Each structure stands twice: as C-alpha cells, then as structure tokens.
Length: 294
Image (cartoon, rainbow, N blue to C red; front, side, top):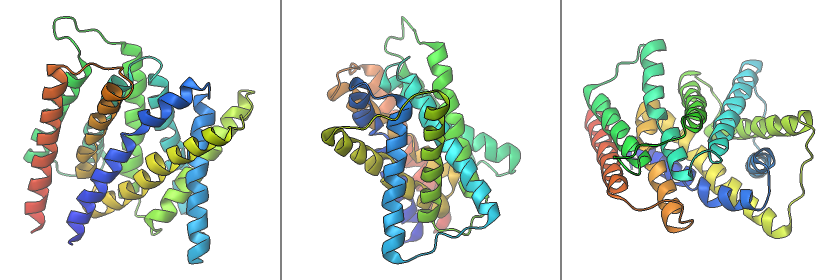
C-alpha cells in the first residue's frame, strides 16, 4: 500500500474517532464532571498509554530544547482547541458546535497560503468552498428562521483556530521526533495545562468511580490516542491541507451521534444535503491529490 493511501486512510480514521467526542463528553458532563477535570483525565490517559509503549519498546524520550518548546506550544494549542470546543457545547448543540469547529480546514489553508506561501490549487479551493456550504447547511435547522448563538459560534471558532495552528506547526516545524513521541509530549503538556488550571482556579481534581474511570479511559484512547496518532501520521504523509479537508468527516460523525443516540438534533433536508456536499468535496479532493502523486 502506497504511503499516500495510508495517509488518507489515517486522516479518515483520525476524523471519525475525533468526531466521536460527543459520544463520551455528553454523558461525562451529565455526571457532573467539569470540563477541566474531564480533559485532564482524557490527556493523562493518553500520555500514560504512550509512556507504556515507550517503556515496552525501550525507546528514549530524550528531546532537544527546541523540541521541548515546540511540544509545549503544541500541548497548549491542543488544550485550547478542546477547551473551546467543549465550552461551546454549553452554548450550542453538539452538532452545531462541531460543524463550526470543523471549519478549521479553511484556517489551515489560509495560514499556509499567507505565512508559508504554499500554493492553494483550484481543486482545493473548490473543495473548501463546497465544504463551507456543507458546514453552513449542517448548522442551520430552518432556512426560513436562521438562528444561532453567535457567542457560542465564536467560542467554537476559536477552538478551530487553535486546532488549525496545531496542524500547521506539526507540518512545518520539521521535528525529527516520531509521531508517537509528538503525541506523547503534546498530550502530556495538555494534561499539565489542565492540572495547573484546576489548581489556579481553586478547584479540586475529582476521583472518578470505577465505571466513570473506565469511561474516561475509553474517552482518552478513542478520541485522543488513536485520533492524534493517525492525525500526525496523515499530516506527514499527505500534508496539512488534505488532512484538514478530510477532517470535515468529523462533524458528520458528531451529528449522527447527536441525532440517533442523544436525540439532540433532527434529521432535516439541510442536514442531508450538508452531509452529501461534505462527502463529495472530500472525495473530490482525495482523487485530485491521488492523481498528482501517481
């Protein structure tokens, strides 16, 4: 299997697993866990799993000072993206919050074009426009009565900005470390961020029950460990922009969970058309990039 195909497959897996966040986060919040505590456990579980992996492989975790600084920045950006997204769940439905958050492909393309002079191809521009239309349709329940919480939209958009910057830095920082090591330090610093925040705000870290502990562990493994490893691999194989575009599969998964599991969304014509547009745009972009590499 060619690296390009592996890259697209990894990007799809990353998108699908990250889109499962509402499946875990909604029940966790219903149990009274704060966002900061939930995210601390999410990231610490991931970093522990990766530390065990390094111990098993007997690989060194030594990094340079430059890499330390980059990993700290990545950890903060990843923390902020998650924090803003989950905060927006209190202001919007999970489906709408997720679709606004997953406008980050546009931000990635803009950042690469402005700061790195990376040429944006016509097929990519077309795909981005179609994706934007699809995201808009997914966000609007009634075209005749357009209503949305603009503050909630801003919060979710700030999460998208942080996530886009994370992807760009992974792609452009030229880190020699493996994707596993990048994931380990990113999640370790993310966990540290939320632990410090809990201390500064005067909140204690709740000790979960056995059942909640298992749920939090699954939350970390599925939506972070698996998603992050495949994300970094995909970025390195196919680049930030194609990975970001495939990432719009994430709101499709999030909305499906919101509709059929938590009954917080209704299946409307807008939703159906939005899903079709997004899937079509992703498929179109994948085919174009595949042709260029043959």
